[in-house]
Image (cartoon, rainbow, N blue to C red; front, side, top):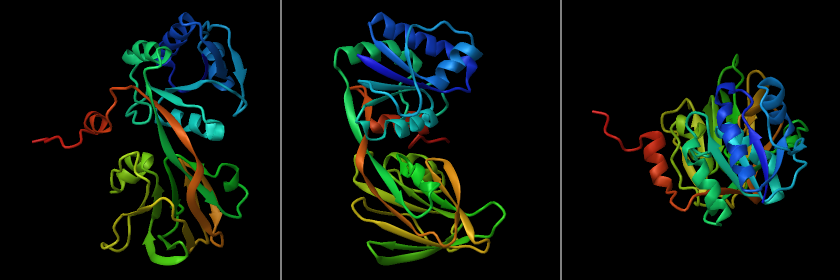
Length: 289
């Protein structure tokens, strides 16, 4: 098998796990191609000796499987590079929470063995697509987690005129609005009171950030529908964050958000259960008394 490897370039103390991963793959006779930035970090900065591998930049690679070793941020970066390639992604968590990257370092050896035995599942996760006339935003218009519209730090709240399939929904007066996939429902959206959504649900969550009105609540809609956002701001601009990467945008820019025409494939072990992850990672339902 051929693996494309992405990794976190900010956690030198956890480089041991990267060495362990390369050792496991080499013993299985795997072909390796490594993101050049990650390879440089491991060899030039940390002076590690790595097995022979092909290096690549950006999305210029082909592989049977992608491995992301880091946290959920590293996984999102890998997913953006995979895009439409239809390559499944395995996430190994050496970060903090690890909801997307949910394979622990202790599970690496067993997981790699299971992959070679073809004993794993692949889940398809929906992706959001942004359409607008801002060329900066259109360079990377896809989100696995969420697209957020936010006020600038120094400005007052913004007004977000929201329509679904052309029909007015409401005007949110708030610090922002998060449009999240089921995958992203346990990320930024959850932190501001959004609902937890099972990954296979064909839905989109709309969650306001610090709404001015107490009767503004999150709403879940069908992911076949299209959202249109028109924003008013006293500063005449606002921020658009696509999976955490933000760009400033002019007030006159209309945003259209819909489900993309491709999915991201996520590798899971056969024993993985979403609700187990909720309980273990987020202490969901635990009585703290």
